[in-house]
Structure formats: structure tokens, C-alpha cells
Image (cartoon, rainbow, N blue to C red; front, side, top):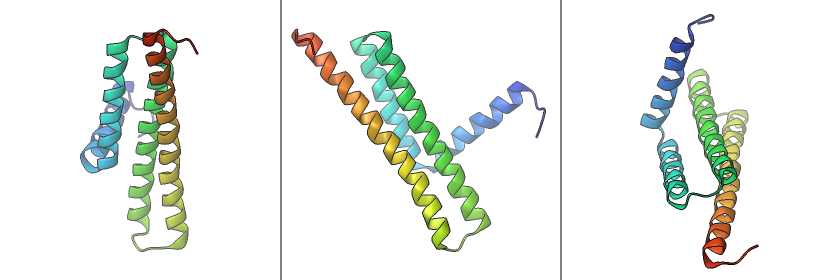
Length: 124
């Protein structure tokens, strides 16, 4: 696997994203949320800083979902039976996704509040 061409490595990455999209409903839901954020950004045309913040948040949530999926599949393959340490590892990975999702929602709400305030003529 080492020293593969950049295109081959990109292909591996796209296969991983595709696998997560096919197998994980939470990843599909997060993709839908990211798409909705992009639609709102295109519609409202905010300053570039909002594009950067919101797209960065979307990317972090999707990346966390991919890490969570990878960890779960690896753990399930190596140790299919229940074990307290495995539960903690899976719960922590899921917690990371939840934490990033909640902070992304907070940033999106801040964006919406500023966007609505600007449209109404209120500066905050």
C-alpha cells in the first residue's frame, strides 16, 4: 500500500467515503445536513468568513463520522463480542461526532442570527 500514486490513494479515499455513505445512515444524514448548509450559503451569499466557518464545521463532522465508522468496523472485525473497553472506545468515538455536530449547529445558528439581523437592519 505504501508509495502508491496520488490518484490511487485518492481512489482509496473515495471508496471509503462511498462505503460509509452506503452503509451508515448517520453519515448520509450528515451529508444531507452539509448539503443544506451549502444551499443556505449559496442562497444568502454571506461574507467569506461564514463560508469558511460553516464548511470547516461540515468537513469536521463528516470526517469524525468517517473516523467513527472506521473504528467501529475495525473493532467489530477484531473483537465481535461485547467488551467493556470496546464499548468505551465506540462510545467515545460517537461522542466526538456528537460534540462536533452540536458545535456545528451552534455556529450555524450564529450564522442564521447574524444573517437575519442584517436583513432586518439590526447590527449585533
